[in-house]
View 1 (cartoon, rainbow, N blue to C red):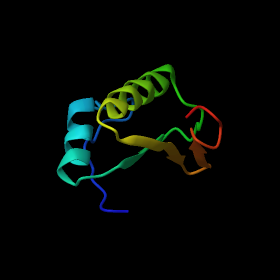
View 2: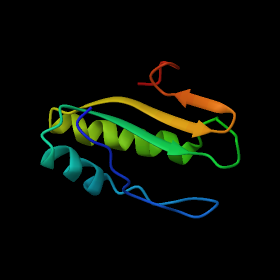
View 3: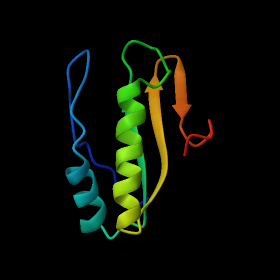
Length: 89
């Protein structure tokens, strides 16, 4: 792991994940892979449609830059959900 960055901080119901900001950090650090993580304060580990859509959007954009999206992890008090472990990535 090169580093970790908090790129967004939201409220109880959501936040904004800007693909350009995420990839700019990857480019500035010369990363060849990314692992995304965010929390679900509700405790529900199931990814929302928005989670799935942003994951796919980031994966496609990163691929154009030869950066692999290794995983997207959702964290809650109940545990975690890994897009990679579930075969979505």
